[in-house]
Every structure is written in C-alpha cells, then in structure tokens.
Amino acid sequence: MECHCHGCGLDFRQAKTISIENDALGRFSQLIIQSWLMNGAAPNFECDLPNAAPQILLRVVEGLVHSTRLAGMRWTYLHDVVVKPELLFSKSRTKLTPGQSYCLYTTAIKTLLNWPENFYKFLDVWRSRPGHNQSAILTDDFGWLFKDWIQVFWQFPPFDFVQVAFDDYVINKYPPSLSVLNCYGEGLKSRGVALPYCGIREAFKILEVKGIRFEELIRGGYLKVYSVQHIKNQEIRFFLKRDLLALRARLDKGLSMYEAMALLGAPRNLVADLVRVGLLKAMLNPQAKDTANWLFERKAIQTCLKELNKHVKESIVSNTQLIQMTTACRQSTTSVIEMVMGICAGKLNAYYGSKNTDKAFNNVYVGLYELKVFADAQKASASLICREAAAKRLKVKTKTLDKWVKTGLIQYVQVRGRRKYLSRVDVDNFWSRYIRCKDVVLIFNITYDALLAGIRRKLLTPATTYVTSGYRRIIFERALVEQELAWFDLPTLPG
Image (cartoon, rainbow, N blue to C red; front, top):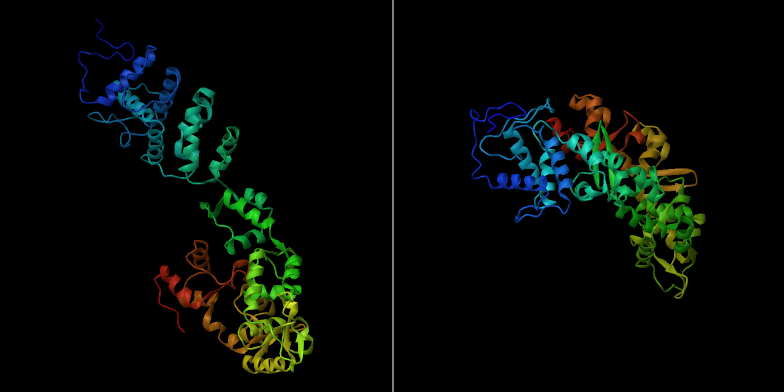
C-alpha cells in the first residue's frame, strides 16, 4: 500500500486529518467532480447545475478555482470546513495542499449550484473581496476571472451559458461605466445583446443634438441623467437609450420657430419674449440670437394660446377705438410683450376681432385710449433706469449685465428700439439678493480654489456659470449660499 503522495511526498501516516463527516456540501462536491472525471452522471441534488457537458463544467470549475485562489483566507464566500486554509496571494502557481484544494473546489461547485443565482452572488462577493476597492472597472473588479476566462477561455459556444449569465449581470447589476462601454460593449453587440444605457457621444448621435442644445434639454427636464461616474475630477454621464429614443420622437414632432410663429400668429421677437417671460416653453432655445433653431411642442403652444384666451374678451365695445396688438407698439412706448403681460394680469383689456376669428396673437386688439392709460401707469410704477446707468450702478460692464439678463437674474422691463430699460427697484435690490465671488472669499477667508472646488463637488450652487461670468465674476444667491457654506463651518453672511 502506498504511504506517500507522488506529487508532494506527503507521508499519509503522519499527516493531520480534518473530519468532513458533517460537511454535506463538500462531500457532494467531491462526488460531482469524481463523476465528471469518470464520465458518469452527477448525483441527484435539489439544486440544479448548468446544462452542459462534464468537460465544459470542469473547465468552468478550473477557471473559478484559478481566479479565487488569490482571494485570501478572509474572503467570506470561501467554503469553511473547520479552519480556512491560508491561500497565497503572490505565488499563484504554488501547488495547492489537499485542504486548500478541497475548499477551493467546493467553493467553485457552490457557485455552479442553483445557476445562475449563485453565480451572481459569487460575482457580488468577489467585487467586495478583502484588499480591493470597487472601481466600476471590469478588469479591476474581476481581475483574472474577466481578463483570462470571460474574455478568452470561455468565449467559445459551449460556454454560452456563462457568457449569457455574465452579460445579464453586467446589464442589470453592474453600475454603468466607461469600462463596460469600451471593454465589453463590442462583445455584447456580437452576441446580439445591447446595453440599456449609453455615453454622451452615442446620445449625441441618437438625438442629433450636441453642445449647448443638448445641455438645454437636460436643464429643461426633457432628458434625465441615468448615472454619473467620476474619473479624475471628470464627470462621465450616462443616459438610458429608451429615454433618448422617446425624446428623439418628440424632437421629430417638434415645431420649428417658423411653425410656432404661424400657429401663434406672432412675430419672432414676440415668440422669443414669450419664452423669456415664461408664457411659452421651448424645448430648445440655446441662444437668444439663434432663434431659428428653436423647437417647440405643439402642446406648449396650445397651452400658451389657452392662457391668452382666458383674458381676451369675445365682444368688442362699439365706441372704443381699437388697434391690433402686434402693431400697437408703433403708436405707443409700450412693447408687445408688456401688453401681453398686462392682459394676463388683468391690467389691460383685449378683444378678438370677431367671434369666428382664430385665437391667435395677431387677432387680438386693444383700445387705443386704454393702451395710453396702461403705458402711463407702467411708466409711473416702473421707475425705469436705462441699461448703461444700471450697469454703472451695479459696477459691472454692460456685457455682464446682458449675460445676467439671459441667465434670468434680472430682466429688461422695456425695450424701445435699441434702448433697454430695467426697473430701478430691481437694480437697487440686486446685491441684496446676490453676492459676488470675491465678497464670499473675503468674508469667509477662503481661497478661490477652495470655492471652485466646492462648485465642482456640487456643494455650492452658483447663480452664474464659469462660462457666463469668468473665473472671478461668479455670483451666488445670498440666501442659498448661507446654507450651502455650512460645509465650511463658518458664520452666516452679513446683510
């Protein structure tokens, strides 16, 4: 009778033994492996194994053992008999002891049982193994299991059940990342499987919109960011393909500026003003000057006309001298948008030309005398200040003031040709609502870099962006910055 191992020379008579009498899973795993090696059928068990040939399953077990032998003795998923055998981290080619081999092969068989639920559990626990930080990078999270076995040795048709299970895990359980798109996306396409999300470049292609117009869709609430990955201070955004396709269908049905002008019966400047004051919502309005590329939903135009219809009277007073609203600005200092705001506020009466006329802006009439009274009241109550004087009062350039108007921080109350006017009250109260970046730095004794770091980390919300205002011209809402600067643990702002 042989008393020594031919491989390692171990003397069986002096070796320590560990009882596996109560280890049902371990003994069952040994029976399965022996039956595969002897070309027999696997023993009956309540958990199902993958439907594959024994040699294929043995190859899968080999890959699992080869990958998991570096997990270490503290790995919670490792099969425990009495004492977990310490596994080597660096010397991966060192021959396994019987105890190590027993635990590793039992762990591999446990992964195959109740397929693929146990395989998903194995992948979850493997990503959180001791000494590893999850990085949302496939090659880092799964190591050899992905680089050698998933991508190389298990790429053949007999191993399709492994590829299908791993594909399902990546799609439904793994966080969106550039690693999945770049390293694994092509493999999914070759197998006829598509990821439910995509990066920003593919989103540009689907929508045929990019740059400022794309950001406008996000800010307007038409498109939601599915997930965000941070890589070296960069923010990588991902979007659901179904959301992109649904938005593309809406954009295809969207109305151009010229179609919106025809339905509203309004000139281009009035349409732009309606968007600016919030009476009309535009899907795409990236730049005030480039109104030709704006898009509108038919529902938004109908809502705008419905709001107008609430305040316009059907009957016309016979003794009232009427003038068409869209051309009334030629005989009055009041702009058309001011008339519309006055009509919606109930300060100016308006009438349709006839009962059967189209409900549109070009068919709305106002009384000439009532318009003069309304203009005088507006001028008296507004206390206007011209653009140049307002910029000088705010101690900024006129270009900066124009940018603030586009951002919505302050509004032009009246436009007369090339002359633009603001409310003196709005100008006087502007710095009581907002605070300069340099004032925040001086008051709280922090650096510009620290303040910009807070903006990048979304701990602070500026009222203007870096592109709009420049490096040191960012301003904040005074009430909001008092709350958000709590992460500096500093006193509140002075009035």
